[in-house]
Length: 77
Image (cartoon, rainbow, N blue to C red; front, side, top):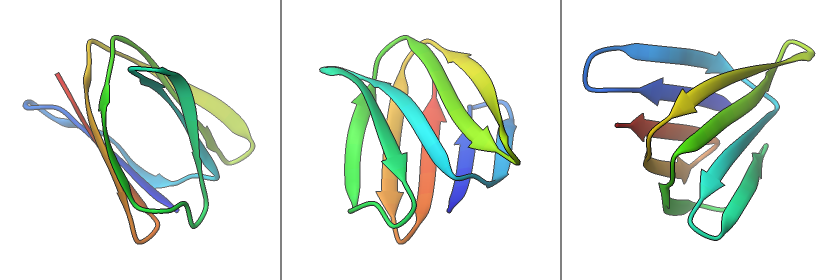
């Protein structure tokens, strides 16, 4: 699946990943390949994603995520 992480200033990441772990209002949740469509707010925490066999992390202050058609779009504050 494709992950896009953007802020008002820059594109922080864009590429293929196997999993994305996100800090949601009710706790961390994971998006996997072919996940059902969803929109959710994000709380301050860490976005973790699996890319080429290793995990990368980006600290966020909050944001929103949109999952649709195997594209995970994360807009952070």
